[in-house]
Structures are given as C-alpha cells and as structure tokens.
Length: 333
Image (tube, rainbow, N blue to C red; front, side, top):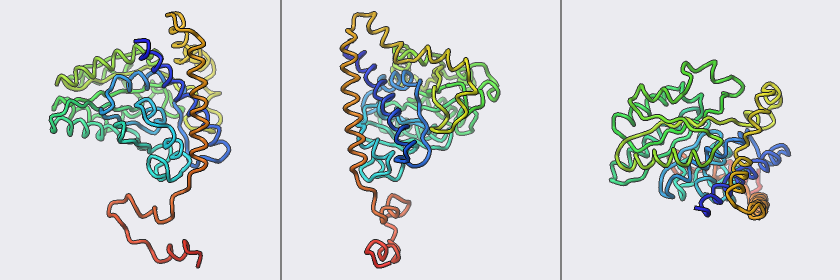
C-alpha cells in the first residue's frame, strides 16, 4: 500500500511540474496555440486513473495534459506534442488539446465540450461486444453536462448497462462563468437519476477518496452492473487558459480559500502524518524535476513534421501531395 500511495503522490507532482513548465514555455512562445492547465485538480485526475488497469480506456477533454500522465504515459512524447514536434504522440499535429496514447489506453482528447462522452461510450460498447472486462473512464467538466452529447451518452450507457465511469470534474467554472448560474441542479450527480444511474459525489482534492470511489465504480462496471456518474468537487487554480490575464483577479478570496486545499500539499501532510519520511517525498520531487528537464530537451531537440505530413492521418490516406509542395520542399520555389 505504501508503494501505491507514493505513486499517487508522484503522479500528482509530475502533472503539476509538467504543466508549470509548459506554461513557462508557452509564455516564451515555444508552445503554439492555447494551453489549458489543470493545476489544483491533480487529485481527481490521478485518483481516477490509478483505479484503472493499464488496458482500460480513458478519454480526456481540452484540459487533459495530466490525464494520460496519470494513466502512465511517458512524458517525452507528450511534451514533444505540445511543442508541435514529429516525435509527439500525434506526430506534432494534435497539440495541447488533442493528446492520445493508445499504449496506455488514452483514446484522445478534444477541444469540443462534451464530445468525449460518446467516444468513451463507444469504447465501452466495443469492450462489451468483444466479451472483455475492460472499462471506459470519461472525463468532462461541469459545462459538458449541459451538452446534448452528455445526455445521449448517459442514456445509451444506462439502457445497455455499459462499463463506463462518467467522471465530472466540477471545478465550479466554465471559463469565468460560475457553474451555479448555468446548471439547474445543485449537484451534477443529481443528473444520474434521470437515467436510473448510480451517482456519487467525492472530494476532488482528496486523492485517496477519489481512488476509492472510482475503484468501486470500476468494480461494478466489470461485474456487469453498468455505468456510474461520479462528480468530483474540485477547483482549477490557474486561468481558463494560459496567459488570459484577468480571470484570477475576479475570483478573489474564493481562490485563496481553495489554495489552502492544494491536493498535493494535503496529501504530503497525510503521508508524513502516516509515517512517510519527508525526505523520501523530496527525493521523488527531485527525480521528477530531472524527468521534466529531460522531456524539455527531448522536445526542443526533436524535428518539426515534414510539410508533406499535413496530408497524412486524414480521411483518405495517402492524399496525393500537391506538386507545389514538392517544389517548396526541394527549394525550387
């Protein structure tokens, strides 16, 4: 159990450091496009993913750098993908909001709110038809529960008793709009009742509580008892997206109170109180720092995709490369 607890801690810290360095690189212009971080939400991410087996499925969302990390993915190709390099998990063509790593069951992420729900339900249906006991874990935010895809997916999973865990990361805001202003129920978990689906509410800042609740849902799903809706009450410390500016200031004292419930610091205190040597945790963090530096070196030293790669991984493959592109690549244009 001690090894498992230290791994919970390690993965939370790894996500925090990965995203912190990614934000710094984004600010310097090294990472293109938008960057949505999950700082403050590490406990619900890690607790959920570590309740799975390596061959189980996981679907993320637009704020999901940490989800494949929590599932056990190598950070080198993840970092390279943020940098848009050919060694990235999607060949440098997916970027921050479209990470996937099939080797650990991470089926992908998307910037379209709620769109991961039918993907996760489809994966669960496939597992069921194949006679497998794999389960599918689907992450989405509070805002996604107002989308049609969420309700369609929940309904389908319920009537077919599919092995899905719907994990709502309720961080209380959709960009800067309080969730309470746009959601009709007090607790998103209440929405499971519409589909006669078991629902649970868990403290998203308590990694072991999340692990236990999701673990129980996984066990039910494997036993053929159908899906579960889990609402993790959590909070993102950072802006909606990196370098947006003023959003943090608008949250004032609320943010200060949530910062006191930093999931990593809460778990550090719990581990030390339970007999773990503080130096052991420091050693883990030092190893993580070295791992992050190595991933940055890997990303920076990796090549960009060739121009011709724009015509691969599309609906029809390969798409004939236009003559003008060959001219440009040969230096004749």
